[in-house]
Length: 143
Image (tube, rainbow, N blue to C red; front, side):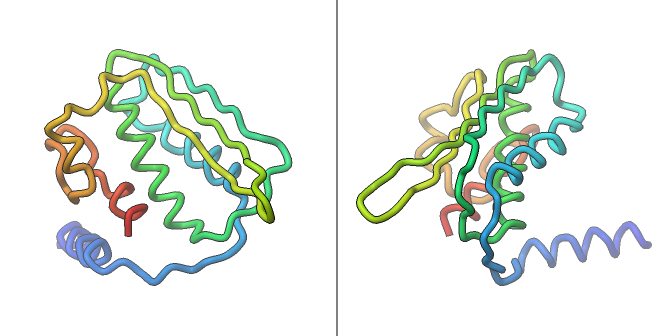
């Protein structure tokens, strides 16, 4: 019975996301700690992780929990796409523009890529087949 209650609560939580809690966050820390956490997943076998985080990156005004969820889903999708092994590369940096400094991150994997028929529907929740992690992170990022 407790297991059923937990499942129902989890579904309710997912169906009604909380309001964002914006703060100045260290995106390098979020990326690094989330990658380490995701790397403990059972699907991570023979995957090299190359993490290139820019030093002295300014903080980013975002919801740290939501960013962590986006990155977790992104990393788990990447790990599952490289079931036979591969490389995940995470890079951060910044670009100076007139009057501002824009931070960016890049995540790339050596998996087979997303088929064109699925790519055009990438922002649809629960799109991917059951053997893959749902693309909740993409939806969160698009909202």
